[in-house]
Length: 259
Ligand code: PEP
Ligand code: MN
Image (cartoon, rainbow, N blue to C red; front, side, top):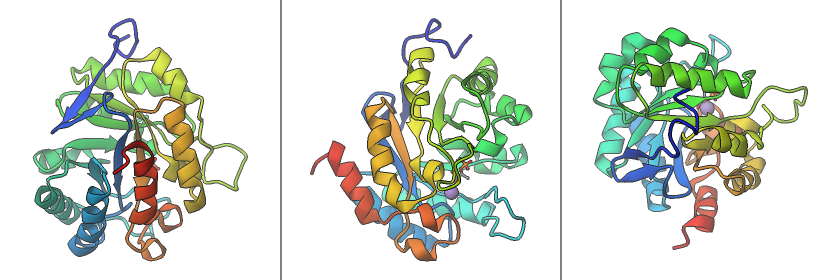
């Protein structure tokens, strides 16, 4: 298998000057959704100052309810691109529909595949035909084997720039949004050469758990952390309850990159 450690020892993915899989940990952060260029800029400029490497925000949002905010689509991509460019930060965002790839291609540095689309094999195959990095999130009910086989779909088409992301799995526990599968991190590091990130925001769904779960994920060997931040989390249009302030994010970053 192309994902296997036997195929290759280590993959380092370069996004601008950032090397994912080399410097540890890489911080990816931003609001769940692009809400406006102003709000995005307000959050992004702070987190950049606090040491975040890559800006992430969603324009196409896979919401459980069709009545919830679905994202600004192409307008959101434009806003994300403008903010990333003016702050000189690479940007990551989710793609749900392959028909949007052409529009997004020159404006996005990392294409995220969300938990719901981990099994969307036509989408994975198309993302395998480009060279830009793909951030593949684990399906919320996916086994490690299914997760790795989804990465294999992308790699088999020729794109070896795949970043894996453990974002929690669904269990009987409903105090948290999902259950962070902490052992998946060292397990994936043992099985594959691909960089492994952790997303404590979607794993826990709770602001108070972001810092301890981030620390645990880095201790377990994660190459990076993805955290949702918002200048005013209680007013976020999506995932506010799991979003933290830039100031709390700074505390987490400072643990690893003291200023
Ligand atoms: C997200 O990253 O905002 C997201 C929707 O994540 P997931 O696909 O892991 O639920
Ligand atoms: Mn979210």
